[in-house]
Image 1 (cartoon, rainbow, N blue to C red):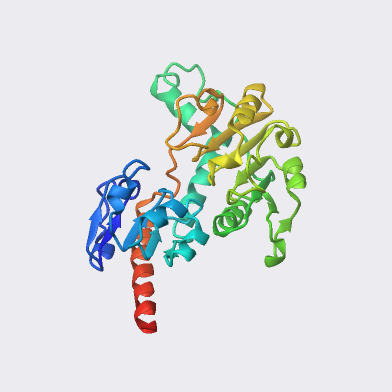
Image 2 (spheres, rainbow, N blue to C red):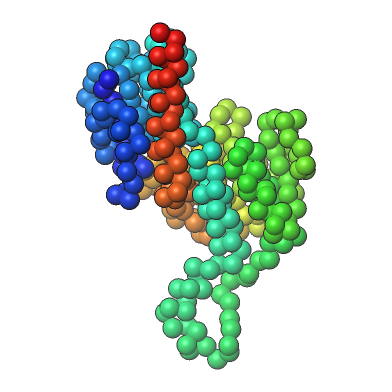
Amino acid sequence: MKAVYLEEGAVNSGDLSLAPITSLISTTVYKNTTEDNKFDHIGDAEVVFTNKVIFDEDTFRRCPSLRYLGVCATGYNVIDLEAAKRHGVTVTYVPAYSTESVAQLTWGFIIEMACHISEHDVSVHRGDWIRSDTFCYWLSPVTEISGKTIGIVGYGNIGRRVAEIAHAFRMNVLISTAHPEKYSGEDFVSLYELLEKSDIITLHAPLNSATERLVRKENIDRMKDGVMIVNVSRGGLVDEADLAEALSSGKVSAAACDVVSSEPMKEDNPLLKAPNMIITPHMAWASLEARRRLIQTVADNLKRSEERRVGKE
């Protein structure tokens, strides 16, 4: 069997081995793959490991040798699963490998917005504390999150972990999820109630027709004045122009995102110039520990798939 790994650069910065995969199957590894060269890279491979490359009806039709597609991510919205089924291609993905890492950055964002750590660190390093007349100072209001209300949109693995940590901070926790009947032990509310009552709103929902542009002007208008917003889910959950406007007006006091609508980020993205906006380059998932789990699980998925195939023959 021939295999190709299309986007090693998205998972490996030189600190990781693909041996769990390459020890199972002869694999050609590409640093990156685009829509312009994906068919050249895939060629007649039977097994493909991918992350963000689009696999639609046309892709499956033009790659008749393909029979296994290992998605190296939790999300598989770039894969047309019905087309894969029509063409007899098995698709696997990797849920939950990055839960701890994404929850960790979520809280890093919240603590940064509440305490303005980086602002004060920069101030100290430029000599402001040395020149200070008093033993302490603060440049922006420091907010105590204990007792505040956090609204968590989406209650999958990451949303649940964020809620656990919120309780440790003694926060009031509101949850909005499409299937509250599956869970217990939390305060499940409608999306509108969550928007109206939360001091901090954090997004952990998939991108679909119900969640696209969830953070837009009409919903921002429902929120408390001075609300903080975190998005570590998908960029499409936010109308970026509306959020930038709300940051400029002060309706939203601060926001943070690890994802944007088009990645890599475009130069004209309105969030780049919005005040009190923290942006990281889609790296919430990328701890070394999480990436190791990812590669091992991708390998395990292939191994189990082959065992099932052989068992059926």
